[in-house]
Length: 356
Image 1: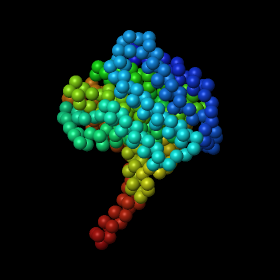
Image 2: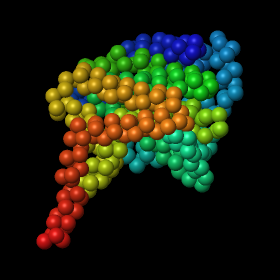
Image 3: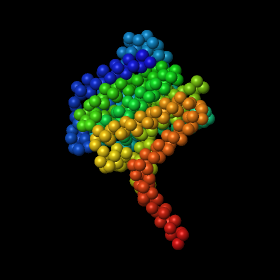
């Protein structure tokens, strides 16, 4: 994995000083302060420069890039558009429909360029042919991960560190599956994220912003489709899904609780996992480290699922991950919130009246 480590090191060395230099303040932050929200610029620059330098000075990396040049530049171009829209939102709030429309068009762009699921491998070795649903499922996946990374970017250091852990894990798995270019791209993404982390840890001097969160989510989503194609051409998407357990779980819980309370699923609120950790008395640093620890557990699950791919072991890992996710949901009090939500209370009341 020499070129992967080199790509990560170059990306880190570009993003780290660039993050220090960029100081342009954007709109007020969580406590009303003006804070540079330049994560997208630093991470995008670190990622792109790393790959270009590798292509210039490494024949092996250049060969990898030559084989999929069109797909790579399409992914970067669409990722840059997503990043730009996020940066615009960092300066002035954009309507969620405008942002989602941009994400849809960017997802459609890379789908047409070949970033598509097609046929999925399930834990234990079963398969699902998506057929005419392929476009819908592929685009939904890309939009889900793009926005899930943004949703966990509510406290210092969380989203960037989680993205670095996930990208590093996926880089290894892609390399082990023989997808050398994708492994190098994931490594560069991990390195660029790590270059931003020191300035984003509590108390943050730079914010990731929507530009950084959307870019990281979009790149992870697209690369996870290309990087997890097995020898049969199928995509075992459950492996990156497990690695992304924390942001995906947080997104799923957010949508469920908003629906059960009769609220708009896309309207922001302050009841995510990081919000509940803060209300429970976690210090900013402890909150960030606990988020990293939870992500590390999910990443371990992804590595085990990959190791036992197409065997009963992967199904066992899947059940263990589901149990872990359910335990987290209950531990942070969402089970009680669901039970006492507006819609469930209405159903419980109706049921009680029927018994009477």
